[in-house]
Length: 523
Image 1 (spheres, one colour):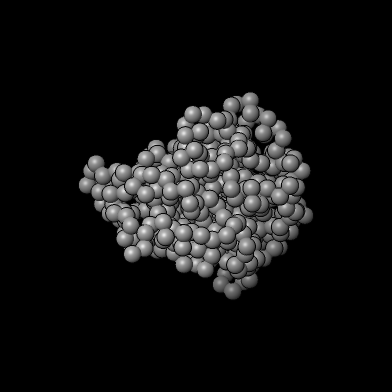
Image 2: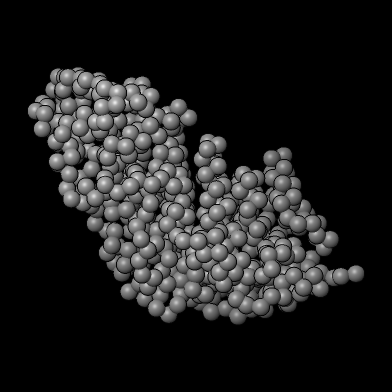
């Protein structure tokens, strides 16, 4: 009869490069050999890190990010609570760390990681931006928490702007277009698209105001973030960790969760097919993943599933981090081959159901009573299974995890300031740009037609009488119907944007910029 040790030696005895997690536990006692690890080449098969609050999910994320970076793999991770920022600084030895590494039988050397800090508000990192066009109607509907009818109207607006050459770069553009289309002057434009009610436009405008009042309005605009900037390595071969600081966005879960999905969709859209690689191009840690799926439409979930299924072939690995496997839809959970399950509790009927569901997601094992084992795990311990180099699931094993070598705590304000001052991304994205786009184009059109100032009497948004509806088959564009001065007002930069073919891919995004270099100057 095979013993646990025999099963572990056979299942985890693969050669480096690997991501070492810790040492196996046999009834709570660490087994010195073999170590529990994931093969580096299998890190693009996606994974799940789950467990109750306070069981060590964030430190597991940090541990994996350190080892990926050391082996030349860039990492993107979300810092929801502000306690992952310490990855940029070396850790400090403590009695608890000494006890942990002694019980595991591992070496431990404090090290910080090459880290860039980014933010959706610009307070604790480089201001990230995306154009309204590139975000697309489906993701924007999720951010604005629209129902199906309102989301379909927003899709109509995007379609009309694409067809008629009005670029939507920021909220000012979207607001101007909505007001124009809802007016008597703009309604004829929408006849071929189906029209929209004034009440729905009012809801969209109110939702936009709510988001702006929470400070999220600065996210939409230019310069738009190029996702190829996530793929950098240092001159000495370490992968750069891009840390999205979200401590000031905890009251805007729809924004940050959907932004991360936008980023994944951009990567999927931009990167070439790569197939199986010795190591992934990027590993993406999606913390508080339940926020992405909460109240999501079927269409949105279908698109998420598509990205998760297909992005592996681009060399990208995704790890969802959440409290329970039940937080992730079954269709997506089925794509997550690497599992790290920290302790779950069963103090309520719902918690008991979540525990049983978690057990069912693991391969069967004769060596553990998984329900009892998962309940009895301590902090920094987990039940683990993954894929070996041949793509075969490894035996389920309970393990005590290594402590991270970087700081297990946040940076100080002074350290944040130094990181931002030295940031390559700050030099690239620190200054906002306001190109001519839909808002300015509509304003110039109104000025060319002699419209009175805003607030004057008139039936249209610019005080003009209603424009006649274009005749069927006239071939006229929205721009020509609304006023010939529109196109003449374009700058050469905006003209290039409008002349570009608007190819919408996953989530209705626009195609991104071409990749740039893969080294950064500061390291």
